[in-house]
Image (cartoon, rainbow, N blue to C red):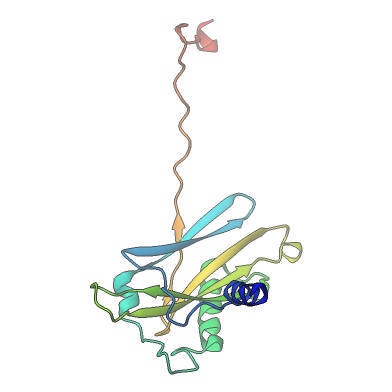
Length: 173
């Protein structure tokens, strides 16, 4: 009896997720950031909305291959990377396939759409000690989401919180 219980527990511990395991819901939008250090930090944001994702082709459950091949998606991502970041020395990208549930109602039928995320790392030792990484989103219809520059507001100095009078300018001393 103990052996049977152990086998059941072992089978449960090593069970793979079901093919119909839920993908994260896409309610409004999803985004991913990128950062280059050149020498100051420059940040970018790539964003995809639910409406954009719904319009992409479905990767059918009975299909072994996605609607857009990984090689074609990588070519598109590299072209966008050159457009945004210029000619630099990048490592081969890590490629992620990311599913999102875009179902619009509470029915039993789920609508899942997939996208690619390409993560490029800058080879800093060959590019004047620059560093950073870039994430590019490619949809299954071949649309590449262009990363947008994140404009950071300069820090505003906080006003003095003491009761002391402000310092007099040097010219008035």
